[in-house]
Length: 73
Image 1 (tube, rainbow, N blue to C red):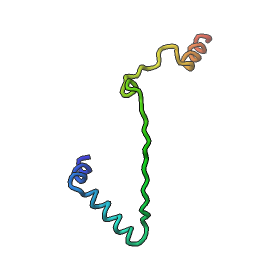
Image 2: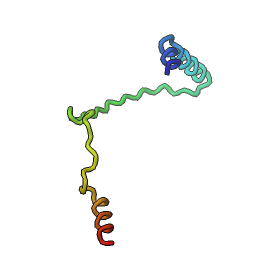
Image 3: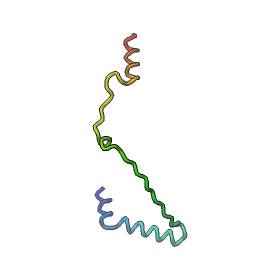
């Protein structure tokens, strides 16, 4: 992560992208098309990062079925 952050800060990634774009555009391998994504997903304020409870005892159908089989033996 440190190397990535350092290269981002000093412009290495921008220079690399520019180099690849110029090189590929020179041989006709780049189609300059613009695409815009305006997707917005909203979650309820309490849904983000809320603590989750585990399965309560006896509520999962598989747990109940397993207990019944064990008790029948």
